[in-house]
Image (cartoon, rainbow, N blue to C red; front, side):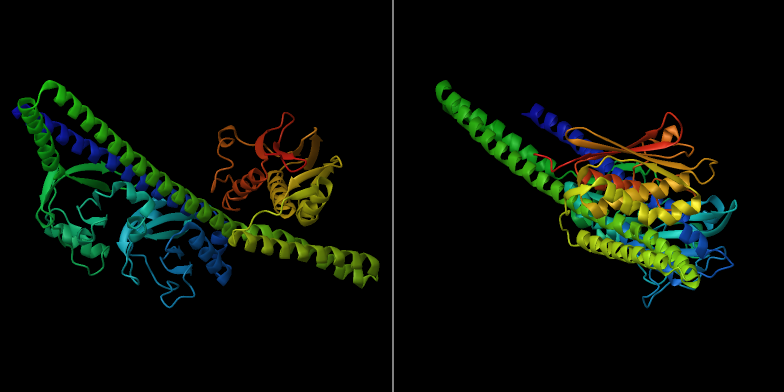
Length: 553
């Protein structure tokens, strides 16, 4: 009996420590992945053309920049996105239309601004000066001509992480606290612990916090429990002893404390003692035959109940995982469309501008037939913009693709019509002789993919002496294979595996690295493939494989 007690205590203590380590690793991985995501977003924003233009002293930031930051705030799920000049004054912000707009405010005193100007990037935690809400601030210096011309900031409310049901459901019996170097709790699923200190604060520490204005006028009081590195702690208000695992985050200078209760040890111990006593009584009172029968029946009943509980638990976990995946995919699609709408509509608008200018010259010369032809092209481009807008509405309403057998030649012609002005501006020679075949696609979305690939090819060939865009196609009984080949410098070897990832870009001032990611998703929605490699004759080649007719499933 004593041996059973000792073994039970040791086993359950080991399990509690193991559970704390596992839950701590799960939570720290979740926080690190979220921090990494927002670091990539703010890095991409720092290299966008719109942000660079807003910091140009020759041209003041316009509401177009505010709208652009607002779109990125919605797409990323951040609380606010704003841009500061070198003096720390906000020149553009996503909340420009709200009563608490940051525009004109000066945040030079904030650590995330000073650190970004000094080290080019930073992650900071602070209370919002206007909102008084806890938030993590991801900042990146905007580099122009080798120097920091300003700082772009993405703020995410701490409550957003604390309320992430999909991430925290698996740790329902676990408490966590994210603390800084002063042991101040920045984030926790236990509300009374937030913005309290887990260890006594010295006078210099309090003075430093007051000077930094990190917590504004908030007074940091002691937490209901104190921690100075010990492996477990008794929390009086919860009447429980907790095992503690501490893990350093990889992406920020914070420590994650994960607390698992040990109270269940007593329940397990009592249960084991009860089973032991019952076995002893049965051995004394019953014959061996009855003992075997009863033990077999009890084991069968226990196994059946245990199996039912496991099936129920696994079913619930699968349902939760499925809901989380659906929500994540929906948010990613809407976010990517919001970020790329300017890129997709700007091409037809640029083409219309060029055709309008040409039409004016033709009318002045009396060449009305040619001017009428241009006006007809402009009308087609207007219809194209309407089609894109309708397509975006279709995405937001969660409607299915309008899949149909579409002429490959007509689709390429439509895409070249939109990209024509840019191809002419870059002096690109277009060579293509596609076969007269059909492809099973949504024609509007397929045109978007082609326009994006043509635009990328133009930029890749910008500094090349020979600028030639080759469009080649081949087919078999079921599939069509379309190749788009440029004479640019090609794709660097290390980028081939990452080129289709969201927010990955090799361009210093153009785009956010969403075009190819969206294009690949569109082609895969047609049950096709989109791949990239370097052509043996030089330049990059993008290969699209599509079905000729509706695939039989």
